[in-house]
Length: 143
Image (cartoon, rainbow, N blue to C red):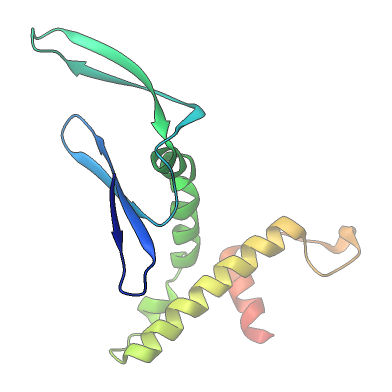
């Protein structure tokens, strides 16, 4: 673990883990090097004698979080870009407009996820309907 500070004094760490063909690095302002209970994994490798061996170990906290939540980030990105990416539809080279499009897409994805999780504002559950991403986007645009 390498620890550094930003110019304003915020501390951040670089966590590293050796993989068979590369070194995985995570830069974070949060996390410890403690092993996480339940974050067990196995790796197969070839030892010096050319024999295949399997090692079992627990991930350290930053890597346990990465492998536990990486699909959440991928699913969120897929939701933001599907079926039509707002950022790509709104072709602009003007930096503030590009940022606005990104924030708009993030807000839309978060709103859809919140609506799906908490339900719609309609108190009568019999009227509740699940909307596709595109239907939700059209409904949100009309609001």
